[in-house]
Image (tube, rainbow, N blue to C red; front, side):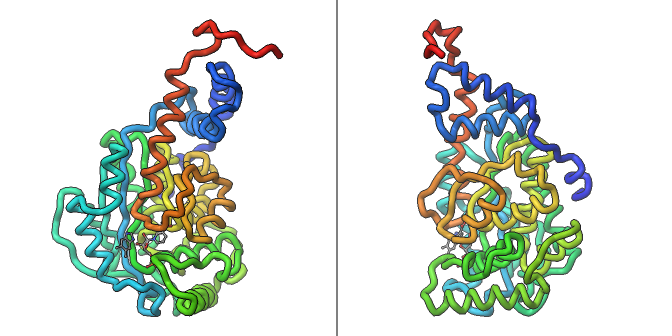
Length: 357
Ligand SMILES: O=C(O)c1ccc[n+]([C@@H]2O[C@H](COP(=O)([O-])O)[C@@H](O)[C@H]2O)c1
Ligand SMILES: Cc1cc2nc[nH]c2cc1C
């Protein structure tokens, strides 16, 4: 399933990109006056292979939830059981992600990738539990190679289910106490930046805990032989993912890869999605053409990941919640950018005089 998905990924279509750029310039607005939104619409045309691109709606949010063995190292101020409690909150519609999804008209699917407790069946809950949390990444691999592939393929399956069900835009979401530590380790491994530069304060930690967290990330890279990592094969990418990633990172990577393979745009949320996208891009560089960075999270590792991927975030509101909230906020902007391509008149059709050349 992973191999099939990777084989189906194509880069942006140059013809559709050129046509979309030319179309932007014919619309009744000064050239470039929609700024970054013009690039977003052109990008989606390239990704879809057609200009104008299809409207990226309806949107579907998938929140991948998992726990982390590294929580035992005191890297988060929150107890681990908050992960499973928040899953229940998502399912009963009480989280910020539910409010933002209602605002964006997006469906919400919650996926148990490996929370540390059993969950009762629920209509919007997909069960793909790989294990009851990962192992402590600062001591050795967080997961086995089989677990990493299984989690990646779960993300692919969830994305496929949503696309088959009619979704025309996929939004990534995550929930996992301590997952900013795993995110920092992935970002450090894939960007080569020092742990001190990419490790943030997550849900909110003091200076002392932050210094400890940087040390834990450094230890994780060492324990997994990822210091100075330069992936030379898909096997090496998977080794890094299994070494310091979380089940939600693996699933989000698969989810984003499937969107690229199916030519359905993916809006990436914060630092967890950014870290997962680094893994996915290392497996299939062309997949990046199919992704939009929803926002820039307050986590420093997110900025490093976006720079490495060459993605410009749409929203910058110092959000650091996760759940897909930043991706959901960006969705109406992405829709507006594409709607312009479908509905705005051209200078010709509206009889508006063009600026003399
Ligand atoms: O999306 C982000 O950039 C982001 C930044 C900081 C925290 N979070 C969320 O907070 C949790 C992880 O924070 P922590 O401090 O426990 O590592 C996890 O559930 C994430 O969804 C998310
Ligand atoms: C309450 C709470 C909600 C969250 N949503 C995503 N990460 C979270 C972390 C906490 C602690």
